[in-house]
Image 1 (cartoon, one colour):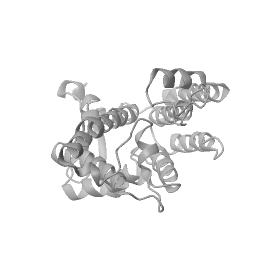
Image 2: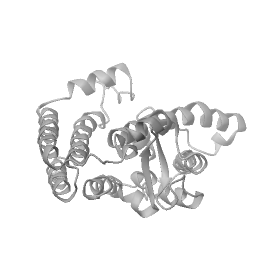
Image 3: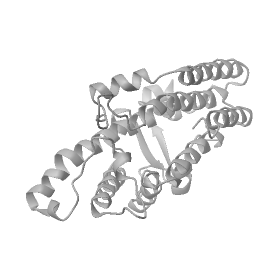
Length: 272
């Protein structure tokens, strides 16, 4: 990401958002949150190999994996965290002059909740695939016709599509991911991750949960497009950077689907 000057572009986008919006503090929180996310993601995404002789890849979320990730932190992560702190400090001082106290309560606190909710859902999807889908395939004998589902090294590493490697097992995993988000967003407007973080998906036209068609379109754009090779990471970066320039802080896939993610607040909090 540093090679693509993504952090610099994020800071520039956040600066432009501060100038164009009446709430610099909100734009600063989004920019700082993205910088912190980049600092965390870079050490956590590589497929680490064991230091032992002829050692294989280190299983995701194992004790050795956590130790390796922590030891991979360096000056790059320190600079990103320092930049995030400076962005928060500067935008906080700017908001003292341009702050708008009438900010809608239900739109605050969503920026950091969304990625945390996505991480929760990511973990749940992996558990469902390993402890529900795989046993069902084994009991029904379908696993004889499909490659085994191995997610020990992460969902993205195993399921990323490729034109020369499109097998039924990967398509099945993508179908499970699609159903997980589509069904729950259509029925309740929330996944377990969103429910835990007290946020929900709504239609911008009706302010209630979107229709099944809208949630299907949204799910096809995100998260399924992320699994496309090469284009997936670029789409993800463009989608996230759009939120910094968007006057309402909405992502690009929410704009396309006419949806928004809002925070659930009590009536007492809304009146304060």
